[in-house]
Image 1 (cartoon, helix red, strand yellow):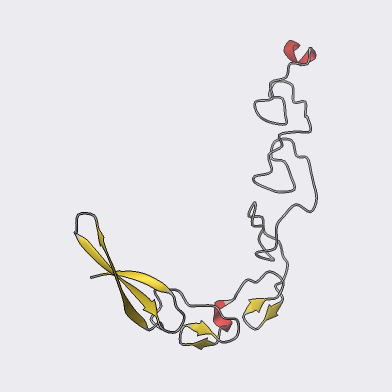
Image 2: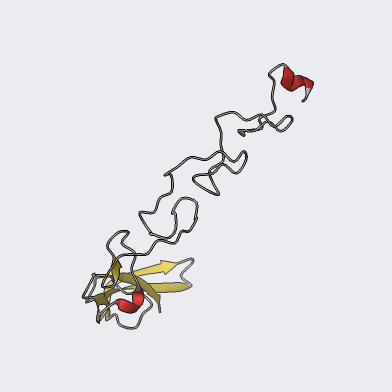
Length: 142
């Protein structure tokens, strides 16, 4: 053990573990890689993962688990995640869950709104388009 550590002057370096002697304190743990295990000292805490956006992947640290989704047609009733192969498309809107297709998909019916925008010294001009089915808007160069 370092002489400095013996007198209580540890080198914490913004961490929970002293870099000189290895002593651990209960503050400044690193939960970035795993919400339930400190990557510096190995301290464990329970029920800290966020599975609300995906039953199988923590939205905070990215850790995965073997938990099945509860599918109600194309949407998980527990986390809200959708499985694209189960959608029932009516033009650009899923009739089962209301999901709207991506803008680049060709099922949208685009009409110009009349709004235009000139970009950077007039080199490019864009017009705004709006889908008559779902209301999404996008800009297209012309």
